[in-house]
Length: 213
Image 1 (cartoon, rainbow, N blue to C red):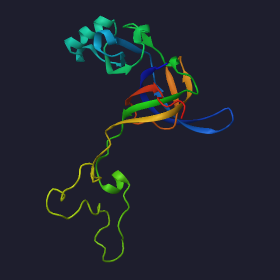
Image 2 (image 1 turned 60 degrees about the horizontal axis):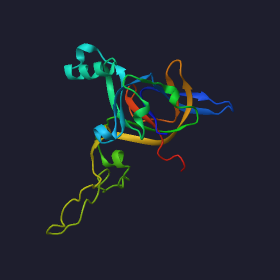
Image 3 (image 1 turned 90 degrees about the vertical axis):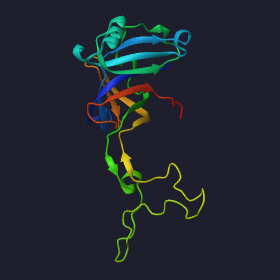
Image 4 (image 1 turned 30 degrees about the vertical axis):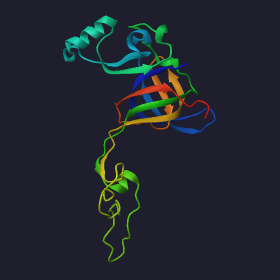
């Protein structure tokens, strides 16, 4: 069964398992999310849940969005995403989705916006190898050849060529992460390893699309 929840990244720490192993974990604040809208194939052309997370002050909400929140009976939220589900009919607008839909040992996919690094060279951005550092070398951190030298339509830099440029700040999905622990009372989820985004960043947690790999 497909399931998902929205959460906020609190940071990383480490815990000990029952066997005494030290595990690096990311702590997520997955306080109850509110279902804002239920979309069906008959009305909207596809099945999905519109879910909101994170409180937002009412004075910062536009009137159309306030009407949307009032229709579902939910308080204004900052982070809104749609979760594609095969059968959203079991949910209703205004319903809460808590962290206990997942359990320890579940495999999940986490989607977030990675940290922005600004403009970066080829070595940092694409892990290029640097040039020789010996005397007389004039190419230390340059990208090297970027295309053929010919006249006509072939003499150009092809699209997708790895070059220096803006790094980070992109939507990233990390697949097949393991849920280590669920704290329903505090709405916390501990995930093994790192997830994309900075502290305080919003992320989407879904059950993995590759369960039997």
